[in-house]
Image (cartoon, rainbow, N blue to C red):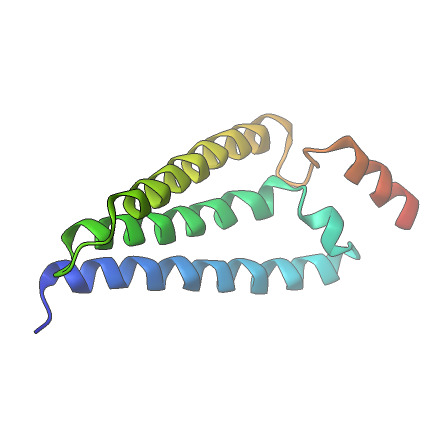
Length: 120
């Protein structure tokens, strides 16, 4: 029988994966409109922030599912998912800060900026 905890944790990982799909769908459209390559796009906060938030939701749901499941996951698996969630949360904050300070379409990596100017 389904419990509220099962529904919530399953909804979290579904929302996380749906967020990844929506992020890549929107960024594919945006990339084609701007004439950019995927390699350049992976250095932009505009892509990296929603990407990290989606992966954070996915990791949180698997960590919580490992704790509250009928048959809990091994402790090391729950810790691994929790560490990944924290890493993605930190990356979200860092990329968001860079996006606010330097602009959402400003590459984080200088090499990507060089590649953009070379391929446009």
